[in-house]
Image (cartoon, rainbow, N blue to C red; front, side, top):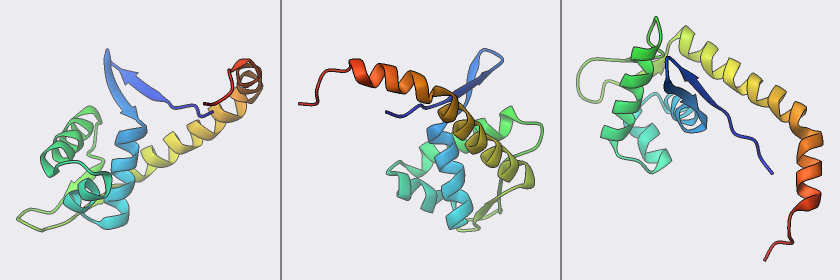
Amino acid sequence: MRLTLRLDAHGRALLGHGKIRLLEHVRDTGSISAAARAMGMSYRRAWLLVEATNAAFATPLVLAKAGGGGGATLSEAGRAVVAAYRALEKQADACARDAFATIGALLSPSK
């Protein structure tokens, strides 16, 4: 069993597992296009998610260099958001352990 988090702000989805994974791939690859490939999504979809995420925060989380093939990196805010989200995930998972055990005991056997 796994708990996934989605954070909403101002009535809209702000962050979830997918956007955080995209940010981590940008951090690890230095490229939005490489991050998109790693996640099996189009560059356009990745770029739109990055733009939406950047627009939601006071400072951009992803800094893209101008020009084709310029690369991208996470800003200090981007690194902080990823770290805070992953810490929140761990805390929520720890809090949910008893509930997981109860629900797991009531599940039907896997088929």
